[in-house]
Length: 452
Image (cartoon, rainbow, N blue to C red; front, side):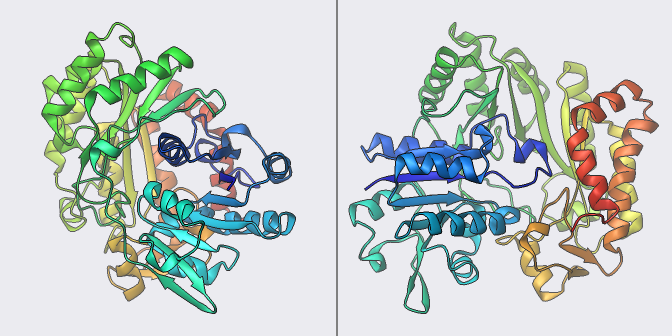
């Protein structure tokens, strides 16, 4: 049974980093590698990375002639993915269409009801689910955990599948993907933090891959592709301080990968001065830290697990050690008002991250904020039923009773300008405009409501 897993490219590029990525899709890499390990043959089309529009994607499918096509999709992409799936299904009558990814993970049954083009939704970790579907020849679906499927006019959601144990997490084989500028590497899955704006798609228990497997994966990447950088794709790379330190020491000691450059995201609470020095020595060139708010009450409300003093200390260490920081801030957190939002912007100005990122809260399905917004709690009001608007940088999904959508967008724009201008970062401002000119254009179109 021929299977193709497909990451559809957007029709119009709105955010270059995500719509025209310079890295292969980590979900496709994981599923391909796991199935290959168990001798289940499949093909991959990463249309985003390959810059394939829908017509070119169909030409590749005509060559592969699959019986099954599995799509992956974020929430803000699901409408486009469903359109592409329908178009493809018309070209290949009888093909079975699967949907996975974060949207189907959070709303498996609802996704099938809203988008009938999909035959089966795979939720949770899909590796063992896909193998079981293949071995069952996509029959006897009622016995397979981790899926939703259609039975007549009804949609059935089966029980969830347990998460994979750490020793079953495969080393990713990127050999069937086109060469990329950088590559994602998972050292763990899961996140122990309780932030209410995150759905934790891999669960709340962190499962750590064996360190030798990680080092070998990096070795193979270096040997085959010699990437410019790698991206540790963990939700929180340093959640286990001792393990992280050992990983960095092994990178430093390994002659085959010593000198490789990498970046990551982690929680400020899990960083200390000595660990940061080790990260620098091991090749870290950027750390993303979720700061979210400059108001202590808001930080407590969103269950962030740290405070401004802790964040300020970490920022000071990063600057001393000379590791650039990507600082993530969120506007529109529960019961946000103009004053608390300005506290966040002023805090961002004070700590002055190398890369400031201001997002507007999105009620992503599967998050606590999604449930709050549906109930009208936290001052929230959902203003769009179009999933394409569920985008934290460019979208119009939600506002607050105390802050209109227009006010949130003004604060977002003011946040970027404040960090760069008030800190007299003229050269950085020019570089920022040059590097993100496509995203800025999309943002301004959205801001002035010129988009459809």
